[in-house]
Image (cartoon, rainbow, N blue to C red):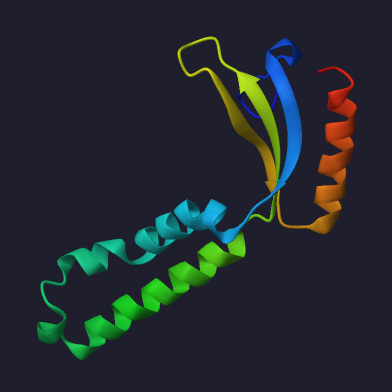
Length: 118
């Protein structure tokens, strides 16, 4: 059981630690940039007609959103290959993510422990 989800051992095919790349985190980066500055970008009809203060605001919010997103990116993920009971089928599911090397080592220990049962 992890958070609100449960992953019975009988439905787990495999387990691994994946080193995440920037592309793996790209969706999260785009999400946070849109959260920080998306609404302001939407109200700007044309960049040439925008007051200077609004242009500075939207660019600042975009940079803040990008920095925030990059700080939240994970480097390692503990994943299980889970066999769903519906038409979803088999897929890799992130059970935990982290940026620290010590957590990566902990994930590796969990992989070894789980592989005994899978």
